[in-house]
Length: 162
Image 1 (cartoon, rainbow, N blue to C red):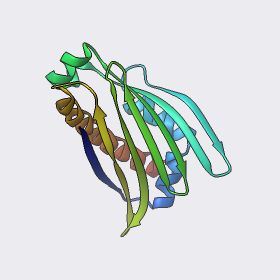
Image 2 (cartoon, helix red, strand yellow; image 1 turned 135 degrees about the horizontal axis):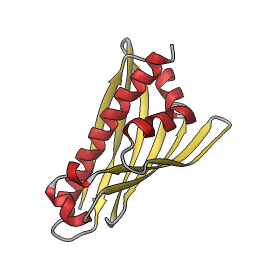
Image 3 (spheres, helix red, strand yellow; image 1 turned 45 degrees about the horizontal axis):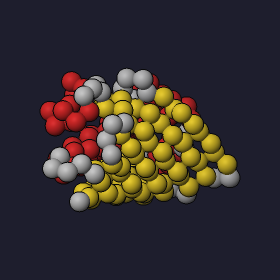
Image 4 (cartoon, rainbow, N blue to C red; image 1 turned 90 degrees about the vertical axis):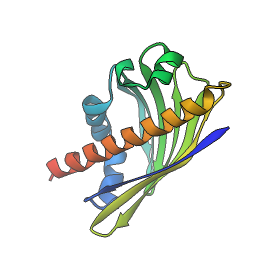
């Protein structure tokens, strides 16, 4: 069984500015250095004719994980994430080392009042009998926490750039 995810974050910056950051290689490297966790890296980055694709590796230390995740993973959580962006929208595919499952989703960035709103919609699916539902819930929660942290970082990063 799969778990739907829908998560929103807001920024005081315009959708155009947030989108610009999401497809900026320097922003991605800075974000990973600040909040990417152990062994975080930008594995690949391409930007051609308004379309940007990148692959990230991020880590969450085992001590920050719920017990169900610690039991299933036996160590740190290593997240592989591929994003493809064009014209204020993107897709994301997330896999987690040691877990037979994935998150597939879509991002949209829209102007919202004096700022903007980033929305992630998608589905988490883990193929482990009995534990799958618990892991899907944990992954959805961890993704929401990560998106919140990334949104806060992006707003600060844009603020500091003028």
